[in-house]
Image (cartoon, rainbow, N blue to C red; front, side, top):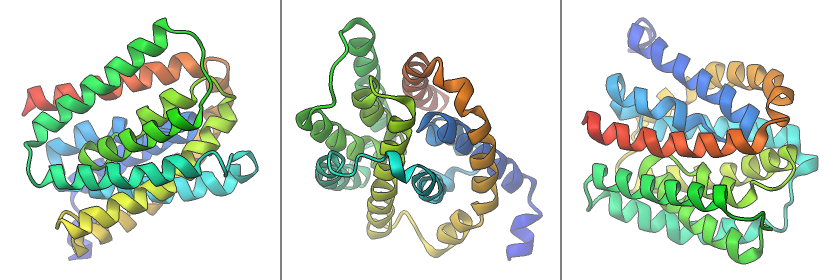
Length: 243
């Protein structure tokens, strides 16, 4: 079974998308789901969101270990707590609402956040903002795998390396919650667990490539971050239109 899977060209194409997404996320702090999910649903639809989230967990562990000195451990505790009800809500809605409706809802939320950020003044990531971002991230991440934009938009005015560190640490926790919720609602069976773990080489390759792009991204970090958030929403809309 395993050899047959590895001989499938679609499997290698999917792994290449995972690697590309990991490269972007290592350089920018998030973006794996944005790059991988929209195309994966075309030829490996069962991989979204569980396998993508598994790859994100493996990558976040690597990035958190590398950036642990820059993580703001205490401020990140509140969004970690508020992500729990967001995850529960997302998992519940997955079993009751149409996936396309959820994608459009998430896209609208992200685009609204980008618009406010683009025309508004710089702001601090206060506990209230972080808490609300954690709640929104739990919902969007569990329903569509796009959990990065809410947290990234709140953290956007900080130093690039600190944003990467905080997001990586947060994603370790959030990915575990999402995977547990997928398991509970029957969206993460043993076959998907194996498929996710088999992405480790692609994750490591993307991690190494992304580290070489960090310095290029630092000088234009916030504009790139807003573009990534916008593209994540556009990708969600495109997925609905394609379906």
